[in-house]
Amino acid sequence: MKEVLLKQREVRTIILDGEEYFYVEDIKSNCPELKIETLKIKYHEETPLIMVEYVHMKTDFDNMITKIWNFKPDRKNKKED
Image (cartoon, rainbow, N blue to C red; front, side, top):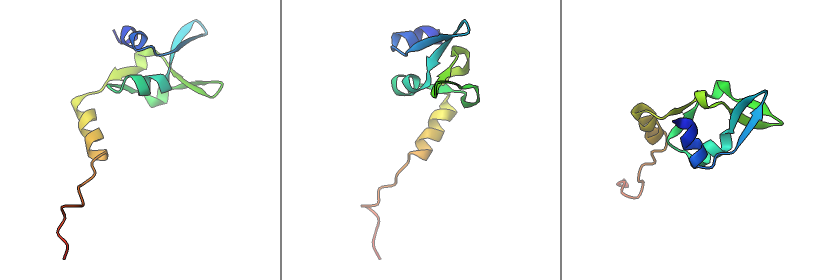
C-alpha cells in the first residue's frame, strides 16, 4: 500500500543490489503524512535512500508532537507592563 502511494506521488526510486529504494528527500516533500525510520537510511553517492518497509504513516501522537514543536505564540496580544 505504501509503495503504491509513494509511486503515485512520483517519489523517485533506484534499484541497488536487487532492492528498490526510495529517495528520502522526495518522501519528505511529497508525502508529509509519512515518517521515516532514520536509522534505516542508506546513503548512495551522498543521497539518502530508504526501503519501503521503513516508511510508516504518522500517528496522532506524531501529529501532536509536530504541532507542539511548531507552535509559535501570538506575541501581539500580550499585555505590556
